[in-house]
Amino acid sequence: MPTRRSAAAIALAAGLVVVGGGATGLLLTRHATAAVTPPPVGTDALPAPTGPIVAPPQSANPRPVAAPVSLTIPVIGVDTKLITLGLNPNGTLQVPSTTAVAGWYTGGPRPGAIGSAIIVGHVDSYRGPGVFFRLRTLKRGDKVYVRRADGTLAVFRVTLVQEYPKDHFPTESVYGPTPDAELRLITCGGTFDSTTGHYLSNYIVYAVEVK
Amino acid sequence: MKFFKTPRRLIMLLAASALLLGIPAAATAYADSATSGTGWIRLAHLSPNTPAVDVYLYSFGNSDAQIVLHHVSYGTVSPYEAVSAGDYSVAMRASGASPSSQPVLSTSVTIQAGHAYTVAGMGPESGLRLAVLDDDLTTPSGKSLVRVIQASLKDQTVSVSFGSQTLSSKLAFGTVSSYLTVDPGTEMVKVTATSGGDASQSETLAAGTVHTLVVLDGANGLEVVNLEDAAGSGDVPAGPAATGFGGTAPHGPSSPLPWLVVIGAGSLLALAGGLRLRRRPQPGI
Image (cartoon, rainbow over all chains, first blue to last red; front, top):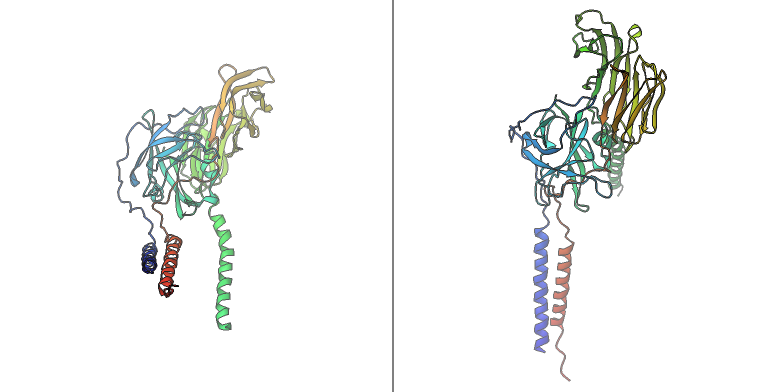
């Protein structure tokens, strides 16, 4: 039976080839990839924006402020337009659909009005850094600029950068009332859970308007 | 055997105790760290027949004023100033008086981190006092919080409503109502005085905001000033934000399972082929 014998030989050879291929694949994918870390920050990566700066709001008859249109953080090279964000149907905060821009939450105060304005951006995409990749490297005292639709600037000073596990998200200190004009910048960080596709922490930058 | 078991038990015990100790430490680490040690204070002149004053804020034990507000007249409420938590004193002097002169009035105030205070000169000039008010910085979800300061001397007792909601009933001169939770919106604020005066104006109280309505003696009758004490998100988002896809995260080795399946299938195929080859050809019948 020469045909049967040759079929068996082919099966044996093919099987060995498949085993070899499988073993190669296994060996090639057993290595881990390291975290991409933000480069150290030296001098400001961008010049500070210029424009008319309006005084912080008074509590008596506070003037209305225009909607924000862009965000600049010179020390970490962030310069992005701001899109508008609302809530998802399940009540969670919408996030920008692209990782290249940041957005502001329209259900909160506008930057420069009394209260804490919420600005959200992605730390990364599936492939690489997002608009807020270096947000966690901000330090107390760093300046954050928000340009508004009327051309005016609101200038903020970072007071705190803090990582929170997502199950300890500080809802009150992020969304709760404040008596002065403040800013909260939100992105992700910490351990990435590849089973859920989400980071386990949020980084929050607290900033207050400069007088 | 015993030699090996003991260290393992010891390690388990150590791990368990570390876990027990670690959990409460982690829980407290995230509580209230946002305030970073500062509180807020604002200063107000709400005594109708008291002339303008200079208001000084001193950090306790420091004779150099941290904040000086000059020529503060009746009805003026300063913006909030962020200051380090601690003990302070507030002094009022006649407008233009020397900073080293004896103050007309002074009071002490303890500022807690994350809390806000209004220190107001209240009452008639003859009984002028500095009141320290705790300003609320929380609102029930989707609501507005509002209180009333009655600073009209002409109409000593007033009732104030916002739309159909009563904010204060027969509030006496120089007193402050408790905060009340109201449905947000734009409504008429109506002030009715028992002595017959009244005032009414449209005001907006947005969700997530805290307001103080101050009833003042105006040039003609009563005046209402709407102070926006604090604001937050009217619609508070649920939970954390999903702001990353993992492209810069460290990745562990991917699952070996698909490759093991391939190797298994290849082995079966090779085994089947091998067995077939080894089997002797059957002699023909």
